[in-house]
Every structure is written in C-alpha cells, then in structure tokens.
Amino acid sequence: MSENTGSSICEVLQILGAKWAFLVLDELLKKGPQRFKQLQRNVAVIKTQSLTDTLRHLEQSGLVRREVFPTVPVTVEYSLTEKGSDFQTALKEMEKWVLKWGGRQAEADKASQSS
Image (cartoon, rainbow, N blue to C red; front, side, top):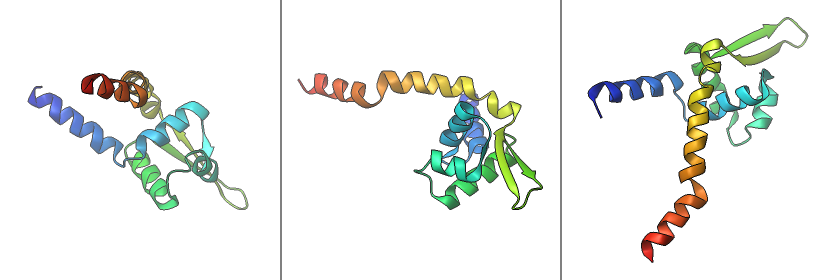
C-alpha cells in the first residue's frame, strides 16, 4: 500500500467522522429524506446524542442537508446532498464484501481452518 492510499483512507474517515456515519448514510440512501424522530426510530441502535453528533458532522462535511421548515412546531428534515448520494457506490461495495466475508462466511472459514 502506498503512502497516498493511507492518507486517502484517513481523509475518508475524517469526512465520515463518527462510527455511525455509514449507518445514517445508508438509511438516508435507502429511505430518502427523514425527520429526526423518523431517522432515530429507523436506526434505533444509535443513542440520541450520538445521532445528533453524527448528523452535525455529516452536515459540516457536506454529505447531509438539514432543512428547517417554518411550521409550528418547527420541522427539520435530513437528506443527502449530491456528495452524500455519491457515497452509495462505496456502500454497495462494502455490502458485497460483508456478504462474502462477514458473519456466516467468517464462521465457515474458521471451522475449515480448525479441521
């Protein structure tokens, strides 16, 4: 691996930030724009403060758009920017990888190695 590759990976991780970023991006890609409570229900494993922090970071990184509607009470909706939507290709590749190597496949590999 070249030095450039390492710095590229670091840059990706800086842009994405929090560990929950992948899950939030995937949710917005699959289901489209959502209000905070909808998103919170759909990604129930993320605590409220962590979701807030993740959304703020993704917004600052230009991946997520936060739109405020002047209703009573105020409605806030989160959606992906063009930059965020473009991340779909990387997520699909990650899904392919986990289907091949994650979960049951990893267990099968361990079992065959210990035989």
